[in-house]
Image 1 (tube, rainbow, N blue to C red):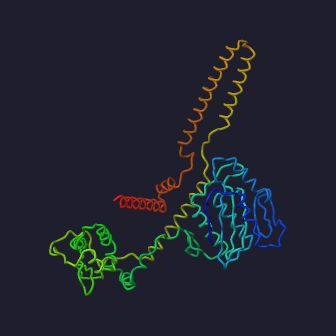
Image 2 (cartoon, rainbow, N blue to C red; image 1 turned 45 degrees about the horizontal axis):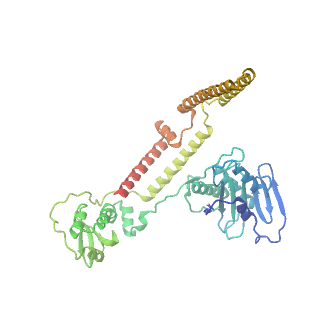
Image 3 (cartoon, rainbow, N blue to C red; image 1 turned 90 degrees about the vertical axis):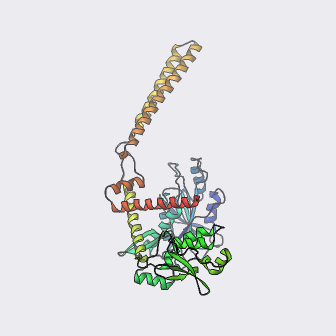
Length: 460
């Protein structure tokens, strides 16, 4: 099961969009009537000329106008229409009620529950799918909901629905793992395993002997230094030899090609297995005929050397640990969501009090204006007194506003009166000794270090 948000070429036309998903002449050409299948105060299910639809408007015919009328209450939002599609694989055929339930669940997870929407089930492809069109502006509060990172929200929703209805799991940003007979949803690994590129003979040696191979060692720092050397047009064979000597390695002729040999153990590997441009043919094209290291007897400062008996971390254990961390951090997020749902501020701003102050001020000024009009006959004097009254009213309004802002700042400054964001909450949990929170902080720290290192490489 997958979710897709069609790309927009221009501002959405809600009328054309609803017509597109509801009017399908090629599906049931003989069907001319509409039939209401189910209806209550929250939603209506209707067979609209052969297309099964669900909406929460007054009627399917007026829904377009209702959406447009709601959108006009928030003119700052340029395009309030949101359209997405839920699709099933060919071997899965959910019932219409299941498909409509999936659409409602997706709207709930996107934070669009209670918004004006319409969903329509299509059978015109090999994959049964349902279109959902929703107004991001709420019909009563007129607030617009952002669907930022909707790809992740929808993909996680797909995994949850697959578990609920027993459907096959599709590939996506999230994957499902079974731990202790419990299905857990977590982010997929974004990096492919490097072990797939390692020859099976060397991979088996690392697994069974728990020893680092020379190939893996050479593919790390020595390879990175070689790639830097490639960018230098003035490089020579001596530069290449010196670079490998810094890692206690040497490049020598062997047969018709070249080999990289560790000086201490005399273990050798094919040079081109480290990088394709280390083949003899390519190096001679770049540096000319092979030349041995002219200073092989000199002692070079070894930056890093190969240790054949160095223990290697088990990739499977590493992956299981990564999944375990992802599961624990997902539980941490669920605890944070529960904290936000149950949060109650200790102190609130009394808006009614300030509204009453403004109201009393308006009534007072109105009465004084009436008295001036009744008692002052001179027109110029009356205008002057009106002007003073306006000035006095402005000063009093400003005083009330300053009082309001001071109280607002005081309440906001108290941490017990506002919800903490996720990072602040994790810091608090870590200070209380929560191991998962400490792990999350460590992950953020490593990610920041990695980001800084990448930025430095980009600048250099």
